[in-house]
Amino acid sequence: MKNPNLDIKLDPGNSSPLYVQLAQMLAEGIREGRFEADAALPSERALSESLSVSRVTARKAIDQLVDQGLIVRKRGSGNYVALRLEQPLSRLTSFSEELRQRGYTPHSRWLQRSVSAALPDELLPLGLSPGARVARLERLRLAEEAVLAYEVSAIPQSVLPNPEAVDASLYEYLARSGNAPVRALQHIRTLNADMKLAERLELPVGAAVFFVTRIGYLASGQVVELTHSYCRSDCYDFVIEMRR
Image 1 (cartoon, rainbow, N blue to C red):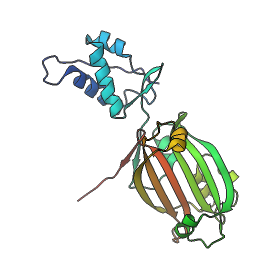
Image 2 (spheres, rainbow, N blue to C red):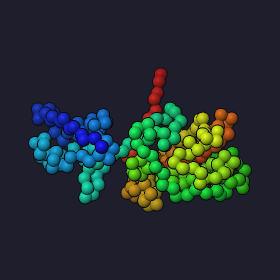
Image 3 (cartoon, one colour):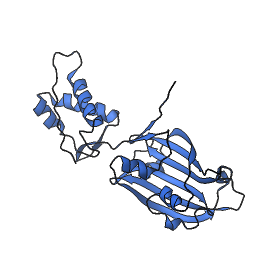
Image 4 (cartoon, rainbow, N blue to C red):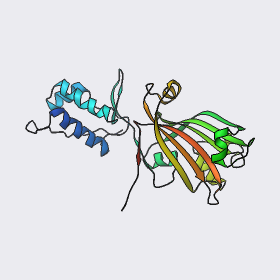
């Protein structure tokens, strides 16, 4: 974990309130990587003493960053930099690949790995007939022990006969068998977490969550993956590059 160098100089003559200046400078430090994810910020008291501002000013600055999703408060522990995963939508990558590229260690907390009959709303997306069976993978996706998403995948049994063989990355397993998707359709919308989902994602009931549905295809056009992901909106940014 990095020791953050605050290097903050507030300007009393600036027309912006001191708490706004402080919040902007802290946000800039977080975005530039001077604070690692889950790194503890100086306390409000430490900020007020080192910058010669009131604790109310320090608290209002922290409040702004909490509202922006850059900082999370842990009761009885302090304020910590939130882990945020910037997910580009212009290329097809797995959760594990995205985390490793950013220096995080991905983990899965498995809830279910089994084979069962495909559900009615899975038949059409997967191109299956009634009675067909699928491998079902249900898990929590974590980075540095922080829960980022709850994920449920259905894979045709012909593609994944033994779901217990999947370890950390589904795409890595599919690549070894020559069944990794080469393109995907992805739909994203938001919803409010009910009690069960909130408990899984360690969020308050009613918190906003990204609901992502992905259908993955082989080059032949065969569907090999239907995944529903419920992603914490305070940890994810979906990014699209647009050109004209």
